[in-house]
Length: 359
Image (tube, rainbow, N blue to C red; front, side, top):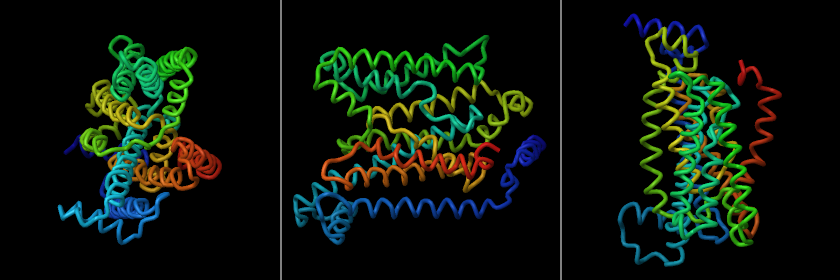
């Protein structure tokens, strides 16, 4: 009890007012409201699309599947568009947005830097190189997704190994190592672009812009357990992440091994990021913005930031993807929409909410 009381006292002195129970119920209510917004966003998004289907037909089709009813009474075209295309696509946006936002929250907490995003250690560049290999050399790398995941994880492993000095991994060194490894893989991607033919080049560029064009139920069955398990573990380690956010010396003083827990949370965050990127390509800003938004609403406690970031990441990508597939007759890569919407938001935070973010 003495150690817990000491931890609470230190965290409260750093601005973690809710650790003693103050306003925790209010924050739980806010989380419930965010979950409700996520649910409503998904319901609205499933109705919208290039092919118009009445709201009644949309929800009747979904309820029939959810209740294991007789689908033979549903028009075949409606069933294909709603259940086989729109529903898995929306679910994939939720899981991918959640994965990127969770990873962003974890990296910002571990690195104690509000400008850190999930791609800081080179996972996006590594995944891009892996995907490019799968596109240019399909006979050798038969699966683009598997290749992207493997090289994304490899890039972070290389950065972590490069930064490790005498059994420790200094934060600044780790960030610099991530920049170096990311630059190397970016150069290799450029090399593959140079030697590829026109068809492969177009596919590489299209993949790099990110999108949910080919979302299927198989993608959901793969990503759902990975992101869910990763989220639950990181959420359970929220207290440890709060302590890591204070610095290595303070963590050791409180009996927490910073190297061990940094490795655990970084490895989990990297795994879910690499898997998300391998499925849909590179989508920027989500992992940088959503933890900021969560922190502005709920404060700095990672026990609340992690679930809020996951849900808000899903909401943001649902909005971006819905715009991407409805604004024009031809679909816009969602990475473009996410960047266009994200930049003004961060400009607003920088100009008007600087103390909240950096204070």
